[in-house]
Length: 103
Image (cartoon, rainbow, N blue to C red; front, side, top):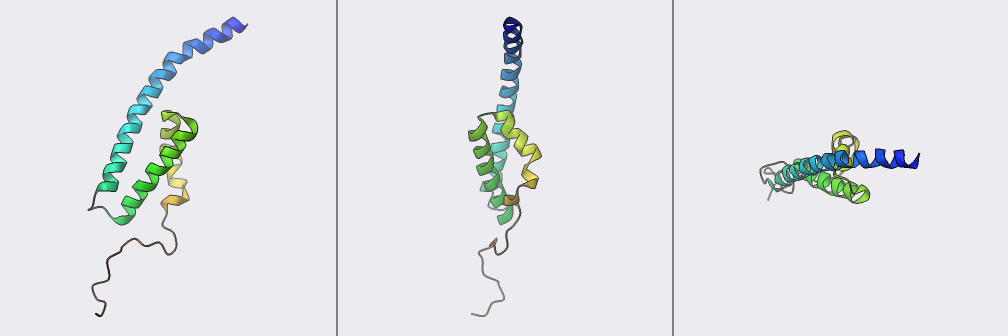
């Protein structure tokens, strides 16, 4: 019985490794896109802040599980439900003074 269990575990290792490699590629591409969005000075402050928070959260998810596939699963399924991606009451999004303010 142990032998059958070991064989079944060993047979799944190459598939898991290939899947993790694909997830790593997707993770890298997603992170690059988020970094570009965060660095884009023409993007709105909220878009840039959202990209920054997404990068931080995915790094945290990856460090907990050490799996590219599980980190990407969080991106696909949980990001929209995370309260960090909605503006908070009193959060400043624009640091430029209004143009119609008296001097």
